[in-house]
Image (cartoon, rainbow, N blue to C red; front, side, top):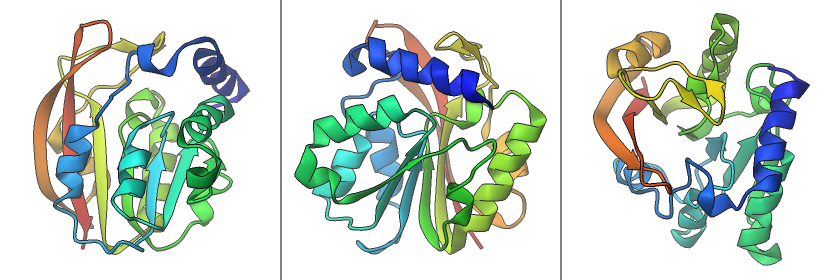
Amino acid sequence: MNNTMKEHWNKLYSSNDTRELGWYEETPEPSITLLSKCNISKDAAILDVGAGATTLIDFFIDSGYTNITVADISEAALEKLKARLGAERSLLVKWIADDLTQPKYISKLKDIALWHDRAVLHFLVEERWRQTYFSTLKKVVQKGGYVIIAAFSIGGAKKCAGLDVVNYDRNMLSEKLGNEFELIEAFDYSYHMPSGNIRPYIYTLFQKK
């Protein structure tokens, strides 16, 4: 992407209450459901990309996971998440401010046992951005590792946070990941925004062969 995109997200997180943002989840139940199907140890490397100020990190910490990395293009989002977690709990997490369309730090990670994304992929409207995203994912996820991707589903929202998005179904995501990954589970999910509106998502769980 570019600095303009970073500024866009920093402005959104700096000027709004996190709980009022259109993608806020008090309890990320679909992700937790898929996580329960992943056979990973408590010290396995977990990477949440485009984490924003997600409450999923609270779940990871409370569940006893000890190797958590949080990444987002927005420093403001990460600072809000740190503030909510508090100083002591924030020390249990590794923090990365990075752009997945031109990653400087995420691409250097190794042996990721779980890649989780609920908020990045559908914003990658240029093919070259998507190519970088998937090449990075395939590079850092270890053999036997898991990938959870949630994205706006076909027929769902065409915009979010003032930006265009790309819609997906399970077949499109399977094609992007290729034969190296096996689709374990996929389901449609109707997300209820804080405003009360509904946004259809597709949730998928893959495992690297």
